[in-house]
Length: 431
Ligand code: HAM
Image (cartoon, rainbow, N blue to C red; front, side):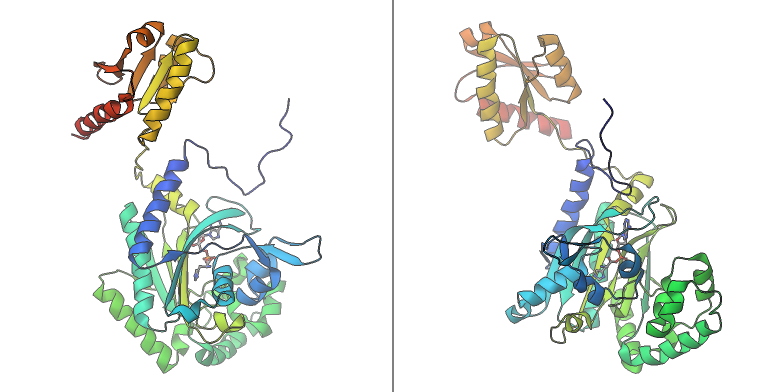
């Protein structure tokens, strides 16, 4: 029968044989961010549409073109999160976390949804790991956050990832910059796409990240925000660079980075690679000093970043970085006869209770096929259980690699003795 449906365009399945790769990177992200003092926040996959419209910005590509928005049966407009920052900020505000002391440091793993044209490294459902820090304007926090991203990449063994930084100023310097941009783009009005023409008055900076080839070619020669920074922003950016230098983090200043979301102020940064094609930005972030106020809170200068897990895994794959496979099955109990099946069930339970991985037959294979299967799943040891073994109360545990056999009593101490055996094996294996 033909499948009634297949996965939606731009989405991916992570299969059991591959999920260890995700778990490996997630473990490192979790551990590394904990060492920087971040604790995990979990927020809903959908929010009121208004949150993203206000937070991410009405004139951004994300809000204008890419959101999965729908009306609920109750008539509310809700949106599947296109990113993690707005939801986390909403939760911080809603639970008044700033009353518990500053800064607040939150990490997250989120699935995100953007209706973009799928291609390598660009999905409609993708996953991000992110860090957000609220309640500090210190440039030390900017540098520390960038260091946290860099250490995650270092721990994963990722190479040739360029860190590009820029400052996009604050509302003070932005005013003058907007006029300069407007004047520049007015001169090309006839060539701009309709969306960008509508951005000219409202938010000319968004023209800089339009994906249309014509608009992006025009944008190349547009005035750069870095030439319009006020003294405070200039000083802040210089300090961020001093701390990055002190930490030995290598970067390039790229005056064309503006990021595609409206909430950014001052520092912005991206980690970019040439290894995975056109969608080479693996991580992006920056400061967003005005977002919390925009969402109805007090002034709470904040900053953060998010890295795309799919793009990161693609990069690791392209660079041939080996991800350790989980150790797999420690003991496979093959059975012959009905009594053996029941006894095997008891044995695997006691071995699992010791924290080891044990399996037995659940599909009715014959003995030979069971042993073949044990080999296929990489079982380290196998035990064959038949009427004889049960009668004698002993069975031999076979080391599948060396062929060596060890007799173990089939009593209450079986699991403990097997753990010792398997430990000795793991040690010799490591050597
Ligand atoms: P973003 O640059 O839109 O920033 O996304 C962050 C990362 O998510 C990108 O660098 C990329 O690796 C990944 N990504 C984005 N779109 C896709 C896609 N369609 N398919 C696959 N991966 C994708 C943000 O989302 C901000 N919230 C980051 C941030 C956090 N800024 C401050 N705090």
